[in-house]
Image (cartoon, rainbow, N blue to C red; front, side):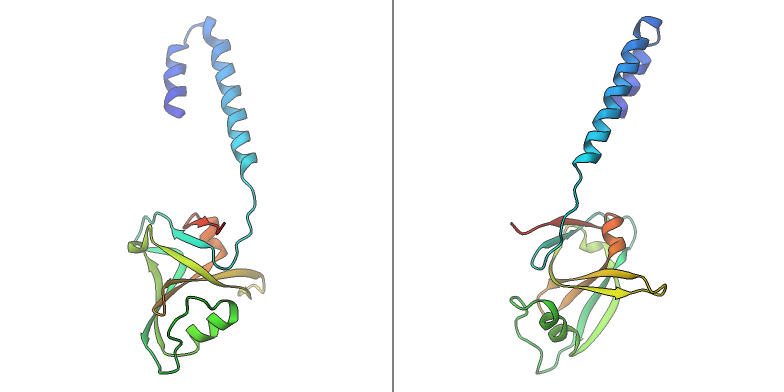
Length: 159
């Protein structure tokens, strides 16, 4: 749209076309307002899918990557059909983990939301954290609110 506007403004350099320029600006303003008004709040739910969006660095800023490095005999064999605290306890309370920021190589891959919780940060403010299973029994993404606000994810609700 910017390219079209620039070309239009170059063509509209005489007084006769000033009205056309103003009309185009007004139409652009209303189309932008309409697009913003169409954005709606969504409710993130267990079992929904999150795709990892583009990443312009070596890792995402607001998503941690938990990868199991040691399994125990009591580890649940299949985490596919357990959710909420059952999932959280089965995944995080056994074995050992490597923890790092989610690498940008995960761009385009996805995770299934398994757990949503509220935690308090250093300033005692509550924030929502989403845990998504990336690879069954192997790795999970620990996602803070800022990941959503900074477009690190694409939300795909389950229908």
